[in-house]
Length: 342
Length: 271
Image (cartoon, rainbow over all chains, first blue to last red; front, side):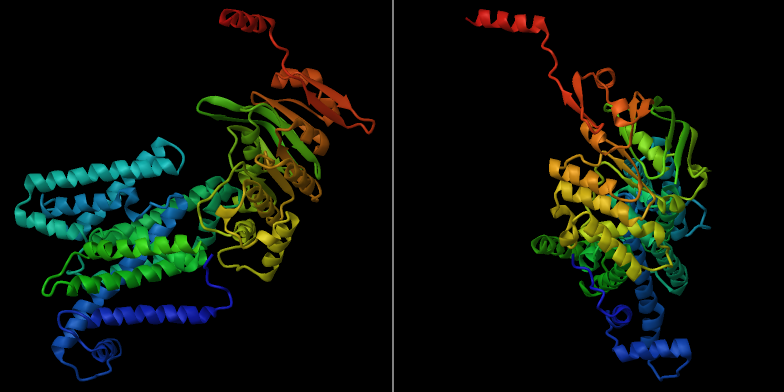
């Protein structure tokens, strides 16, 4: 087991983690089509937060603050939240293939977004994000209902999720092929693969509290998640109120996922793979695994966003493409290394 | 610490699995539950552990119904070792045992040196101290079973419930494990397969058949040739030692005569 030995200073680890996160955020603000020096990024933040009054180029300051920094923070929140959801669902459902979208949430969000963007549901009152959010919540409710009716066990939830996902994906395809013109279809495709382009500070005001609250809820249940190591019955015999923990944590993951998907689209791979990567780094104890996964996910997503902006000059790729293109080989490497080490 | 089931029933899929069972477990006793496959032993153990609510009837601990206690309160006093609890997580032997401290820790009350000591003692009890840092998936079935027991001991319960704890163990470890459990200052309820283990280790034996407890008493009262034939459908001779203990010797089913004649006919045809 390659867990961090207790001799390593806790405070040191926490400080390093935050330093890494802030460095990633700063790089996220600095790197792009126009390269902006790191000190300008720092001064911009100082100007905006504490009114430091450094003389800066207004355009640079605007790019850093209005576009890149908000975008990097949302990317971090999204990466952290999706990774947390992955950790929690993999532990609760005892399935290493579980990810935040296993409950049909991303499929529902897509249908919701498409319904608003192409069918014009809500008559302009609903934004794409709001449509996606309602779609996600509706899909989750449907999947939960089906799982409850199908009976006990984690298998029922996964099967209900698969059925729900197929249904909503089919609905999305149906709407797109029937009603969308080529340009709409392209725009929706882009959104479905994850898109941070339109992200501004109001999105941060939504994503950050949700991610932090989600982290706290998950951390509060860290020991309960550990207790699921040998299954739900074993957890019950260790004093865990299994039904309540299921209800709380699955609702929390559903809400986190729905919010994130509604802001940036359904970014794949992060919620599946970061939990596994984090386990290789810090072991399986949730007290350590949850914050580690959140941090890894946050940094990974910021890095993926940077790559999506610079990999083809003058063009932004959907971030989901990057997370999978970069993430899959990296994950393969971790898997094979892990096998060699054990 | 007395654990009591009063007309407890439980059903699954419309079939009655545990049928109006009355059972009082005495403090500090080793109570064995024997019975054929599917007679409801496992379900009864889960009901006694409070991880399943009975369809009807009451399971109570010191007069207080389990249904009205929190899971955490129950787990501080009753530990359960299930049959074949497995994991694919990459945990170490020690981490598996550390889970036993869960009911004594809160989200805000951290792991302490005392917990470390309790876990070390539990590992030592089952003779697994040298294996503490081995990965779970590298351990044998017997080693895993001993760790499950250690986890239950780390829970520091007053009552230990075991569901066929000696499955997959060689005879040395079967006896060793039951002796280990017997030596604890605990009330023990164990579903057992081996009637001779029950005879050697149990203070009392309950016999389950089709969801009901059909007999309850000391090993010599319970293990009779008639009952073994009636409940298990097996012919056996029960021998009694001078010290009052008994021993079950199974006999081969008497060959049915028509089968023998069939076989002989076939041989004749072959010639």
